[in-house]
Image 1: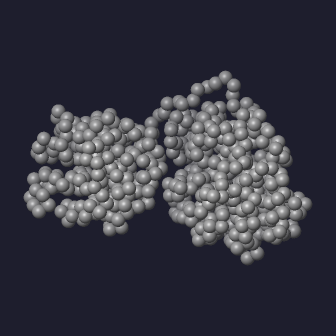
Image 2 (image 1 turned 90 degrees about the vertical axis):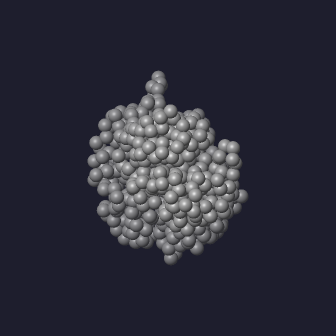
Image 3 (image 1 turned 45 degrees about the vertical axis):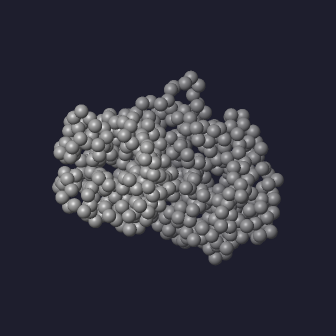
Length: 370
Length: 255
């Protein structure tokens, strides 16, 4: 399990290693066909800030080699904001006095129709909080069955599950699982996740092994930028990605590194990442792993998303509502985070085209499901 | 230099040596000694299994050397499993180099039978080192089947052509969780050094040493090349710059 591998890396020592990288280390990393984790550290180090332009060129080249000039489009559907966790930065924190809803089967179906009217979406991301009793595996499985006829590719972003639960959902039409570790800082993890099942660091971080064992087609990983020193956190995620690839080599992977935005909980980010740094990180991941899908949500502004789409990012959401029932059932009021990109899916597509790319809506078909 | 561990055993030398094609067993023994190798592969078919004083065996049994019997001559998984069991008794080791080549001309390994035999032998407690095509997916399948290493070929056996399969070997090395030993086709010390610089864990050389004008000196040359290549890999090679600065910057939007 990955927790054992992670335990071999000391946080402070890794941070020091990253901060001590010199320009020569960055140049070595840029010249390496198969960069090592050490090279990745050089690419996310402060020393690499001066190499942003060559990094962008290399990132664009690798992206085009593997993905062409395409950007895969997806849209989230929040099924519930009901949650038993109390993550200090999250709008779904159970101590927030927000109204809680769990969409009924009829409401889920209405949301499906509303999304299809919004744009030709085929990749759907189903999101829940963590409330196993009120919205557990049975509920998620039911939602998958309802959504299946409307979309060709279904991904869930829910609480970590047991391997046999992932396998069961895969049989019900599940294609991918997204789960954010949020931070790999073992010692500080519980400051942000003090209670509920999410307080169990090992259960969460080893969830990716369980997904791999269950044969999930695609695994999405993520670090929430704003909690801990980001360079160290994303290095741990790169380590995790490398670890998973070696073991579960039939699976596809994606990485996410959302920058924290204000939420109803009022938590203010501990670290702030600039646009330049976000671009550096995107290029670093692409150079480190040419095949990984790099995903950008509507948390980021349109101008940034337009540019990064042709340089390293390979999937994007559009038209997103981050509240349950937000497309039809309920007015937008229960959101998990606020979006920065309010463009319609058609506008996003047009902007991608103007930047020389092509928005891809469908790249999977139900007939490939097991 | 870091040590290499296979089947729980530590190897300081990353040069493995084969024992075929030498003009005499005596010359072979001297070449083995000169190479500093700690792993020597022997074709079972060359050994008189009934005779504990077999001349070839006598020449390769040396302290500090792990014998690696190979199944060369078998044509399918059933024969390979049988051969491995006989080898375990005769050589008193559970190390086995799996070579299944039904084709007697090019001696190219059969991937399907090799995978089947690896599964069975690993379950039986063998330390299995399968000789195979430079096929990255096959290597992952063998790893899952319990192979202790993978041994992809650099070029068809005996051709001395060097790293013909280089691009595929790079992928195999990049994604392998078990040691990668490059086998077959390495014709010169520079080939071996290049393989080690790529990040191979070891190389196996036979023909290039056996048929050299002076096998003993060639063995030494390979030993030095392997050590140098490994040293360079661990030291971290400086790389060629793959990018060119162009006129219109891609990152101007960040200014």
